[in-house]
Image 1 (cartoon, helix red, strand yellow):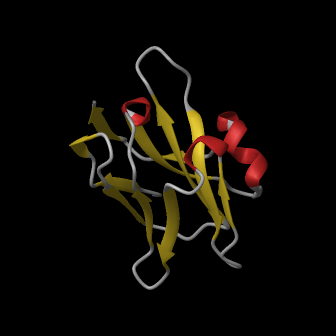
Image 2: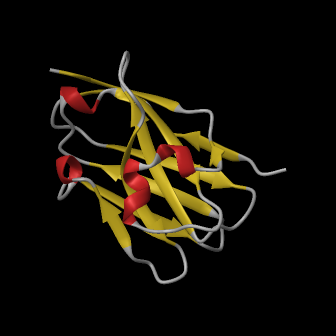
Length: 124
């Protein structure tokens, strides 16, 4: 049974940093971080092609967020710097099967596996 378990969420002030982790029970061609603010749809934030290390970001987080992986630990990370109040959301680790690429950041329906989510709250 595939499990994705996030950790590292919390609260900080604008301008601060947080690092999210996702422990995966399996290996996947591509993994992603999505987020969902209250009352909003779930949207992709960043992704990584685990085999070649290619990374993908939405424009709103480019230069502030960094997605990375530790293959030995089967763990995905999201380093979030210069956080803004609009980054407040529940963040989900995600994995797709059979498909991979930046386009999945806008195609949440193609994601096969989701973590339980971790809440990130940024105060102004």
